[in-house]
Length: 100
Image (tube, rainbow, N blue to C red; front, side, top):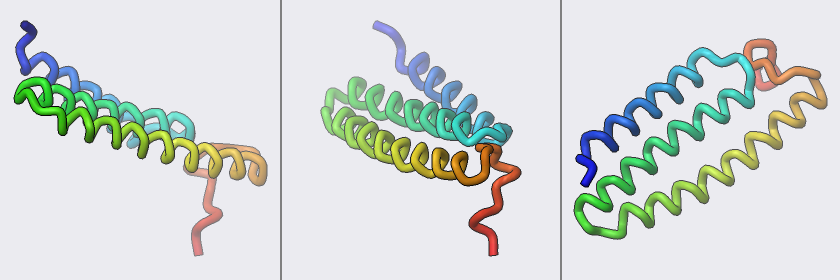
């Protein structure tokens, strides 16, 4: 049996990698991928505690989180594709369409 600390440590490392990617990336697609890594870290925690406490609610929350993540990626990619079509770049720093 693998100790719970290993799973939680792995999820923490995934979350830190995702947070670093969100804070430092300039490309919109890399930012979306980093957000997905952070959501996978949260799912890892849900499933870890679900297994540890022998309760299936954590797995249900993980499934709901995956469905929300899929919708988030679909909307984010649609926005990025329209942005690339209109501006020719997905660089987050150069895009200022939504500013006043």
